[in-house]
Amino acid sequence: MPNPTASDVHVNVPLTNVSIAFIQQADAFVATQVFPNVPVPNQSNRYFVYDRADWFRDQAQLRAPGAESAGGGFRVDNTPTYFANVWAYHKDIDDQIRSNADSVISMDRDATQFVTQQLLIRRDKLWATTFFKTGVWTSDLDGVAGAPGANQFKQWDQAGSTPIEDIRRYRIAVAELTAYRPNTLVLGAHVWRVLQDHPEFLDRIKYTQKGMVTPDLLAAVLELDKVVVAYGVEATAPEEAATDTFSFIFGKHALLAYSAPAPSLMTPSAGYTFSWTGLLGSGPMGNRISSFRMEQLKSDRVEGEMAFDMKVIAADLGAFFESAVA
Image (cartoon, rainbow, N blue to C red; front, side, top):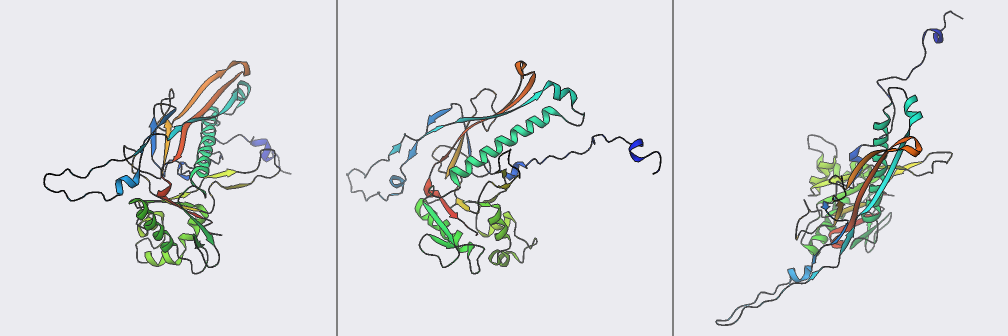
């Protein structure tokens, strides 16, 4: 054995230019990418819903000389409400741990990113359970492997499937019911993987400069403003489990919906997120990060909060494709 040995001349220390942390990109989460965010000063309140049929009914009549004109009105429902629940999570930094940490580790930065990640996962999971499931939208379609029947479509990973026709059909169906054409398509990551290589789309874009299906090209083919792919991931096994398991937060489904460009009076949208910005120190999404001393624990606490409510505003403005791929 040569002397000195490798361990005699070098002592392993933490690298200062690299560390490994699986922090998900912000654009992997869809909760802020689909429906408009409505900043609200109060935790709860009401909003008005105008009766659609009253506005769409053909009621104008010929007016005879000296006679009154035909007239009428419209109904307004003032019972819908929102309530912005406050979701919170914290990470404590113990004095002893802080004092013993190597310089490469920024305890406050790591705690802030960790807490923020927890809240982003929770918000996307709530978005999925609110909007991305059956029983929510007027148009509810089931994907099947064989010949489709009523309220069914052929799964898009099956030979002979027609995703362009399916999506366009329900874009027209929603427009006929509401006079608004859906402008947004939300896809689970596995659905996006299939559509990227689907012959229907490849045939439509084969002469484009890119020559491959991208969300922007998919949106252009379908006459939509945007296609959003849900890449958020969660660990599904408890901490004490012997093996970690992971899965996408969003399943193998698709949602076609009309999303208003921005929230405003008398503007319909399939959904809204009401964010309580009136909570002291909150940002535009009802979010805030606090850092304060927990003397009884001899620790510093980094705490994150998000206060919001997600509401289906107009079920007629959405079409949900369940099990779009097998």
